[in-house]
Image (tube, rainbow, N blue to C red; front, side, top):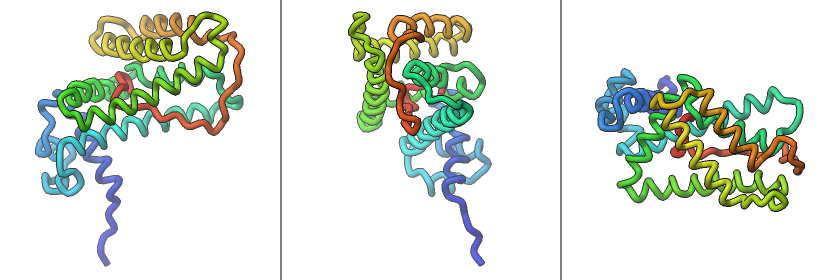
Length: 219
């Protein structure tokens, strides 16, 4: 009887190896051969699942996104109450900062991907779509707290929030700021656009958050 192969597990194994190579040696070291060696499989197996480096990179970043989503879901499962807009936004942003080893590894890969996508229009298009979705999600949460009364433009605030978390993540990865300093800066800005005491409808408990992994500089 033929052995049943878990193709998703095989693809995940290869993508995991790609992330380790990219995080430790940079994208210039990523090739089908190097990834195959890291994964302990043949180059032929890698080529069976990923015909190009682009395909391999995009799948790895999909895994980062899935990991972030799984961590968010696990945290939500531990809470009895439906989170407020601020809690939703802050929880997602914390997954995007390199506050532990796993998120730092994911962040290095995502940061390298930004440069990789810059000269590949077809890859960059997906990146722009993910960024737009993230910005819209943040703007919706900010808008839910009646920001007009406080002079806050939801779209501009969401744009600034993305830029802030990107910059903080890069500097934490580079050792310029400590994780605690980054969190303090993030919370100070959140206080100005999503104060803890702000009134506003709580989101549905089944609201799905799908973060764009390519923008993640932490996960």
